[in-house]
Length: 148
Image 1 (cartoon, rainbow, N blue to C red):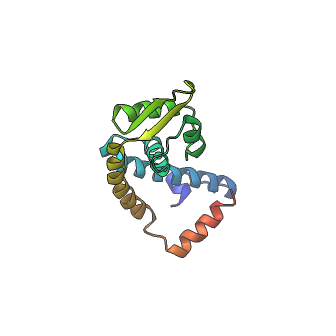
Image 2 (image 1 turned 90 degrees about the horizontal axis):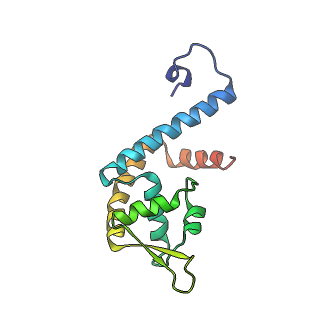
Image 3 (image 1 turned 60 degrees about the horizontal axis):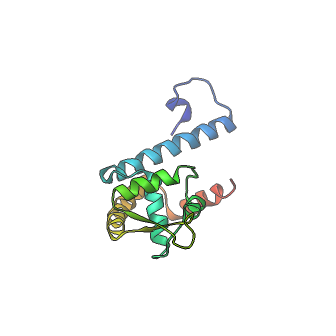
């Protein structure tokens, strides 16, 4: 991807600026691809992330702070994400009897089933996004990303 061509400029962009623009363009491309993969399920990438976190809890409930800590995209609207997932029947929210301020969230059987279907679409999307890279190149790319 030639950054100058994408943003339609004849000027040579300084290396650091070009790198940042490149990262933003790649982020947008990956996000769009993943959003399209999840679109048939009516799920956002953030909702998908919450479902995966809850599945990883292995039937143990999570609270909102646990979800916030583990989210790939840190955000303050986790309550709204959980509400939307509840409306879809994918999660349950239970108020703890001993501490009414504590809310426990679990994934439902329907949520697990839907997530399993989404996993197949995500695997396909990941393959399409990364198909031009060898495993060695992906390892190198991840090493470079770790420098952030």
